Image (cartoon, rainbow, N blue to C red; front, side):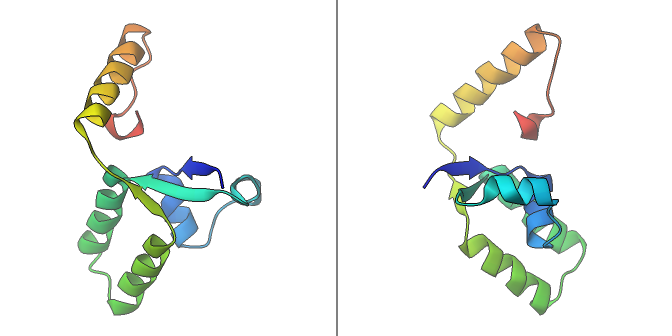
Length: 98
């Protein structure tokens, strides 16, 4: 099965079952993955919004179906290279979108 990395916005919409049809269609048959950054942002959202048990359980169930990509030194170095390349091209990206 092919994997696809979801950003935080798509992950949030998926969790809420509000993905637009064209996006949902493109994800059929794919294994969703998220970065450790997205996991942190989802947890932060739940904490700041003081989610109750039902919503936290829903998040946990949703997370059971995705692969959380781990952090390694290689990932950090590659992020630094991609980020620098984007800046040199005049197209800097937000840190969590690189």
